Length: 284
Length: 351
Image (cartoon, rainbow over all chains, first blue to last red; front, side, top):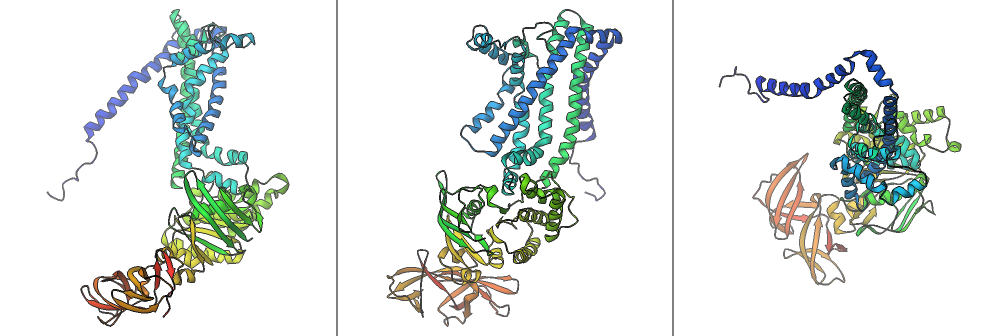
């Protein structure tokens, strides 16, 4: 072997690389970008007037409001649950801990339709709880409480999953240090624990929010599809679509897609920010 | 403030980490808790801090029972093994934290807190780094931030968990000297945990050697080294060799030779002789207590360590570089100083 020979290559050759990158890009284009562009194209095909009219329809406005309301209730609930669950799992030892970790993942593995049906069983006309609550004037099924319950169930793991590994890695020394310096329990939580998990928490909340707004299956079962009352945006889109009202269906879809893109944009921003912080913590 | 640990026992489930440990610490003392991992030294430190509560026994701060006092009310300055700095806070905010979280009536004004934090950073020689984040500091600097943060609450005692464990050898030596100076300047009662005997012997006023949840010896560094209270202390502190011996009618015999010392009132039977390498004198074969064969010779800085095998067991001896010793030589040896133990407990031998 002569000394001028090129050193042997460790990575793949240029052709392999081009094929791999090409496949990934083509796949993304066909399955993600083209359909997304299609949504906006269809939405605006019959002019901006029709687009705006479809969105200002009372039923559309109601669906948008309901979606924001349900997400607005479910996401904070799951943020609180996620922090509490991650805190107890990362910082305490207790019997049944492994079980709790598994249970948190349950909504990921159960079909959303099944989740919806569970609530129908629990709160439906044939159940014990449903009629009892109805007597007290609280309607769960085919109303906002049912939609919130189904959404909370489906989005339960997002925040907790994001926080558990981080909090486990961070351990309890910072909290102990705060206590030794005279801080109380709440002071320690607000000034030490929460700031050290803030980016992961926000990231989890965004993912949770994206799923809460887009959830279809579980919500569909408990909603009852009452127009202008219990239709969230995904449900409303389906109804419009079934009525061959494509322009309106795509107009509402485009709003959902926009919300999703906004969420993704925010997530990207946070990931960039969060990566820096994580790297700094690792160096620590 | 003086501390008193009174028959403290700590159990974690079935595991018993400390058995009836008692220790008195005088105000202003610098104490090292020395032991292998699992000896209970860190548990004892956490009990003093109030991070754990004893299963039984009492811990007294200045004569008052503090066993059930919350950590917030004990005013202990605790420096954690990996410093546990608040990574989202600047250095100055880390140091100011203890003052900042005080309830309204005890809290100094904002500018006073900052002045105090600056003063402490000057004390630990970190002035100018106020606005850095912990991740932008070196290990030794973080250590000093943690110390300044602990000192900010004007602690009644200063507790340090393996304070130099995560630093490289050079920084560790510098900080050791610096901590001793700081202690002498501030006069805090200080307890630190370490598994490094050199650190404990060099830095502390008194060394508390622990093993399996018990205190083996609490004494000055010189006494711990020269008069170990138990076989464990002899083995754990400093280099040592163990040789088989026997007591026959009060005489100490090793490999058939009499060591020339007597023990009174002890039953005949086997015993262990412990000796440190620097206390072994090498001589002509046949001229010492026993004769051994040289297995190998290592150079260690300005001296040589000679490993011998003898009828009583293997031992290490220190020799000057001038001594011409090669493996295979037969050499005699005798002891300038040695200790006798039976089943871990010392036997007093007199010439």
